[in-house]
Amino acid sequence: MSDEKLPDRITVLAKEFTPAAMEFHRRHMSEKGYRLDGGITARQFQVTDGLGDPDILFDGDMYYAATFVKGSADE
Image (cartoon, rainbow, N blue to C red; front, side, top):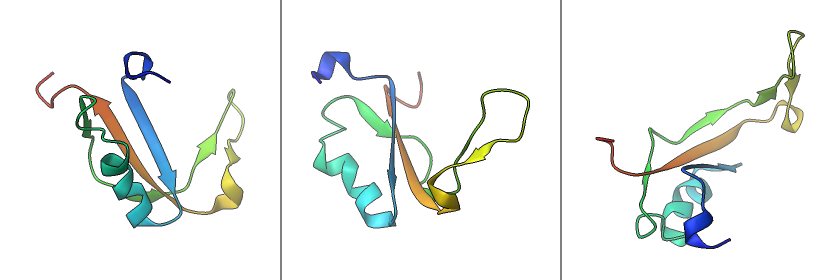
């Protein structure tokens, strides 16, 4: 995917903290206009498609989430 077509917000999931944190540098996200939005924290992920109970993703395993956002914190 070309840099022009990258979305405004990208979230990377990883089983461990270090790989999630290294994605910012490995993919040169700063050069592409991204910043880290908040901290990198472990979370459980769930998905819902209506008013019923959500489905738990990844067998309930915790994943570290690093979200990168285009633009500065002032925007």
